[in-house]
Image 1 (cartoon, rainbow, N blue to C red):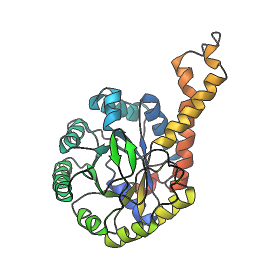
Image 2: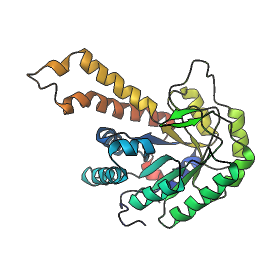
Image 3: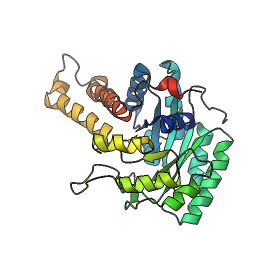
Image 4: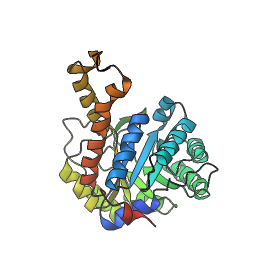
Length: 301
């Protein structure tokens, strides 16, 4: 393991395997700052829910760098006495070098997103990431095709996954595979109707393997549950948390609580408190959908 790998962090392999076998999905929640991270970890601990917290490359830059993220997460795990399984995951790592960098810093899981590369190059670089990650017991997520929409500068046109590619990549030593099934990053446009369950069925037939649903925010609940029943074992959430935080914060300002000098409504801790509470509430709602709420004990070794 890397020198500062935290004993409280786990890789995502066991929780994803348990989810796939028992037809539920682990929630992957992108974090953006201290409040985000603390809210997710507290909600997970309070509900005994296994959780993946993740950063995009853009979020890492925003927070000051990979060592800042690792230090913050490790400190919260210790000081909040977080005992449920938590993985710290790199979302959409664009290069082999970035994956190695976060592994060296103490991440316990990485995604290498080679979907923008020619398929043969994607395979070769995924193998390189897997070989490096294996030395440190770090789980790896790969991607074929691309996910629709844009996230932190990563743009995908939303191609549907190729079952033949899924079968090949699932045998590279990865723990989970992202493949397009009609899902889109960000808010879903009005013209969007449904996930492609035919594609998901074909992918699972070719590769009965844990699959990841990116762009999980905004998909109707019935579709989410159906996708989980068909093999989706990890669901990525970012936009839905951002919207919940925004809405709660807007209400605070609309009520002009920030202008109340007597109660020190301008205090950042008070300004951010409504959004913080909304993050915890949304976490519970979503993990209930996903079926992983309260499942921490079932995913431990």
